Image (cartoon, rainbow, N blue to C red):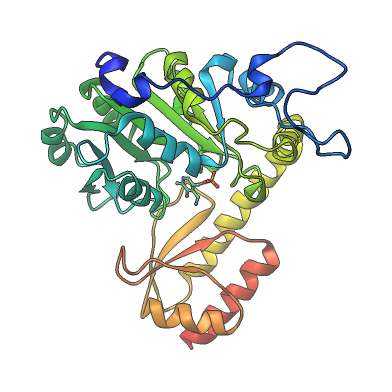
Length: 343
Ligand code: PMP
């Protein structure tokens, strides 16, 4: 990796971050008159700005140090902060592999960054020959790799990711929002090997806490320090930190839910295969499946009229619907409607 100081935006290098009341005084006390809080009520105190309890349990679970962890208000906040940390508006670039998660494009646009979109190949894998020529551009700062990829559902090959991590002297972000549904270890096990690696995960999928808005970045401590300087002081609420902590304490429930969702996924895929209008089911390592279907947009509209909402991804990949795995009842209702539409 290039020296981190060459990658970080010059204004961020110079930034003196906001120092909150909880930064200025960190010890124990019984009378808190420093943050203009209301002395009455249950949620009257600001949250821990660094989510220490949550990070301790996350660090233990992932076999990492708390200094290698950042917690954001959803991983969408993390994506935006990474643009703000590394990408100079109007000058720098980021790169993604399309089709992929739409927020990389939105964050790039918000931050006035050029986004290079390299198409995935026919198997929805990275095309290294197409990608390598971009890597020497000194203005290319960030590469986003979504694995398992949204909306295609598949994991991206380790060999290709390794090659990019080794060749590129900027930052490689691996978005693992769906990793818990895949039979593959997290790339966060390899942080020591690649100092340009940032791995993001979320509590919104396998942990069932989309409402709580909790995202994680795993990276080397010098990158984490910059993210801490950049973030809004109290970016994760006390309620949400507690929800994340409870989920980490309840591993059994988490594991059971993943098993159920994976079982439902294979049942749904088996049933979909027998429906005539379903032309192709793409292999998935996530809690959704991408399906090629005759007249997908029509089918999508007809399903909505029955109160069933899937995601029409036809603009990204012709005639495709992305179906999230629901409960047995929900999946069966969907299958019944699809069978009727096919007959
Ligand atoms: N990354 C990917 C690949 C996603 O699909 C999503 C949510 N759809 C996110 C990140 C955002 O997750 P969060 O709820 O943590 O902001």
